[in-house]
Image 1 (tube, rainbow, N blue to C red):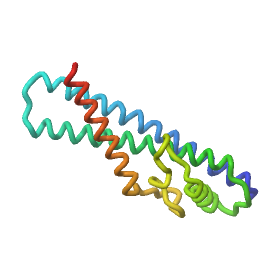
Image 2 (image 1 turned 90 degrees about the horizontal axis):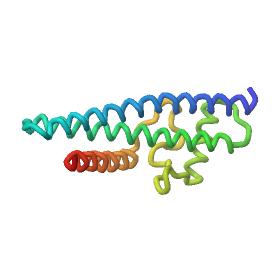
Image 3 (image 1 turned 180 degrees about the vertical axis):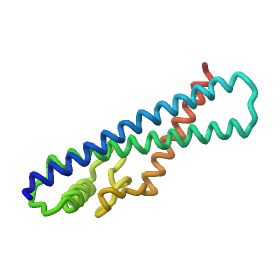
Image 4 (image 1 turned 135 degrees about the horizontal axis):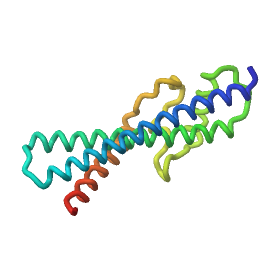
Length: 158
């Protein structure tokens, strides 16, 4: 199969991943705002501490899922950009994927302004099995905590 076919296959794979992650991102955003609305309605009447704790943990989880999916979307976007700039002979789909991820990590590509892609992917990872790397998880937990804190601040102001 010519090199262009593997580039096209990989581009189609990453595009499909972007599409599915976009749907999940919208879903978790809706869940997060639904939980914020529930929290807002519960602030006006007394609730048990366990209910409040469940609500906070649910919001943190939904925020974490939102940020993790957003980061994965950004990683896929960086990988698509790298595909368009990858040259050379490719012999298989897996080799194409490994070369793209290896090139992306070696060139120290970033998400946003300062978050390296290497926090979320590793060289030679199975193309359908990306596991969350600990530092990428900490970044998402940090953003989730900040998001939940800001939402509760906004809810208390309203």
